Amino acid sequence: MFITLEGIEGSGKTTQLDPMVAFLTQKGHDCIVTREPGGTRIGQQIRAILLDPHNKALDPLSELLLYAADRAQHIKTKIIPDLSAGKTVICDRFFDATTVYQGYGRDLDISIINMLHQIVLDGLKPDLTILFDLPVETGLSRAWKQINDGSRSDLETRFEKEALAFHQKIRDGYLELAKREPDRFRIIDAGGSKETVKEAVTNTLSLHLKTD
Ligand code: TMP
Image 1 (cartoon, rainbow, N blue to C red):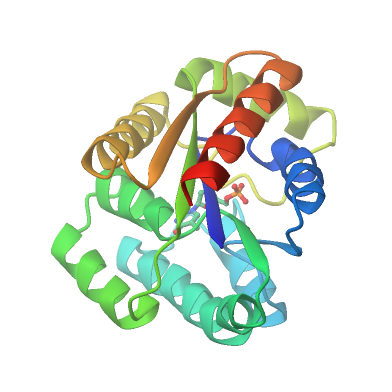
Image 2: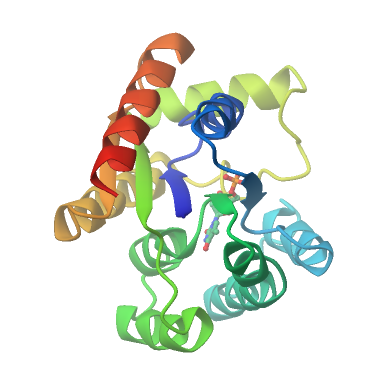
């Protein structure tokens, strides 16, 4: 099974990884947690370029191609081998992030992004995508709180430094994707406490396992 987590900055999706693994392991799944960008050793080097706040001059098309390169490496060397070995792969962000950040956010042509995804994904699609949704003001203030208290790296703030309007486009973009593919997406209200969100995630996983 292939599960992806999506959401704006500060949506709390990464915090939910441990409880998700605990729940799925208890249900008999052998879980692997990974992320994009940076799910492989080479991908970590690509991640550093992509998220470095000094790289203000990074051209949107170059940015798109770097995410695609990270994903190609990740799929070929990690995701496909793990899925083939019968593991449940949980990926913190995947191709939907490119559609919304580079497409809706950077205004790159969606048909170019779709074409790239046809090549890079080669038919691979998540079985379930959990969208952690919350107002952008709440997400960004959480993200900056974590950056300022050191629990989130200040070397990776290129996107957090974008204007509120950029993040609103990302939130709207995710909600639009979720509306277009209701069978794959589950939207979770991520504005509540960690415990409330954890409960919603567990319910979502439970339902998905029943219908799987
Ligand atoms: P993270 O902070 O959730 O690890 O995500 C890294 C940043 O990269 C986040 O701001 C979203 C952005 N991103 C894209 O712009 N396009 C993509 O395809 C992915 C995977 C992430």
